[in-house]
Image (cartoon, rainbow, N blue to C red; front, side):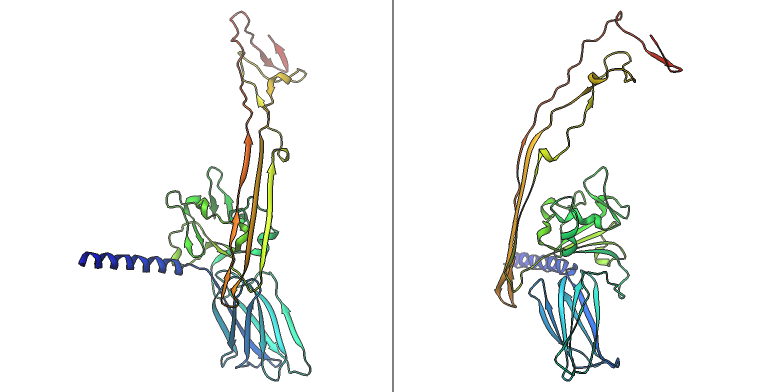
Amino acid sequence: MIKSSNLFSILAVLLIATASMSFGQERTGNLEGTVSDQNSALMPGATVQIKGLDIGFSRNLTTSDDGSFRLLQVPPGRYQITVSNPGFQNATSEVLVNLGQTQSVKFNLTVASADAIVEVTSGDVATIDSESNKIQTNVSARRIELTPKANLNFSGVLRVSPAVREEPLGAGFQIDGSSGAENTFIVDGLEVTNFRSGQLRNVQNVSNDIVSEVQVKTSGFEAEFSGATGGVVTVVTKGGSNQFHGNFGLQFNIDRFDADTRQILRGLTNTVEFIRPGRDNSGTFLNPPDSEFTNFFPSANLGGPVIKNRLWFLPASRRSFSTRRERPFFQTERAKPTASSRETIIISDGLTRR
């Protein structure tokens, strides 16, 4: 009985430690702002409605005595903020909340003379977080959609950050000059770094279709990421909303879209054999046959509400179908020349002597 109790205690401690590590990672941003009248006087007691445009997230706040409001742990994405106060015109603003950043917005309400709404749209623009000294690059879902990508996964957009480049001799990414084994990868708050190689696990390299935001931190990040001596790559996936929506797509690649196989230089068999101007060198190169292949990548996702404003769903799937036919290619050597048939070629002052 005592052994069972000890085992249960150990399991509970491990579970709590794992949960703490997971929730300790960044998955959200913050939103703050101030409300004032047309004379710049701060306005307490104003109603602030925050509604997600991409996910089913909504909150209602009231400004404090200094006319400010603040909302923590906001999922990344676009939000519509509506501010109202009796006797004043409503003001509406569309803002973008980035992962790990605090988005600030200011509202100036005017006296209501008629039914009108003041709209201010910030769009997908760069914002300055005055409360942080981190150096990072945030790639929103909108930017992912418009950026040419090297592959179908989120790793294809990492080079949007000026500090990232592919490692020439490895399969990882160099961040600020560090090797690919010195980075940390986090997906939805869970670290997915391969503990053997220090690189991203292929199974966690999720599809771009379900990525809400990718963040690349290069320096100044928090102590919770102390295991990274290079950079920290954080990915947040999308969630469902109050409207049904889905994407269905097909990407493919066939051998006809690729360039021809590069020519190979025939092996040298004479004592000296080289290419010279004015000589027929067609026999010096070999043209290996091209491989035949077909790659298909269908993908689909569908999201919507289970219970509006409370519970949503967003399943996604991506498959890979490939066929490949290799044409064998062999290079045979000619018979070795005898001593009587060997020739020595010497080049000097542009003249050829035998």
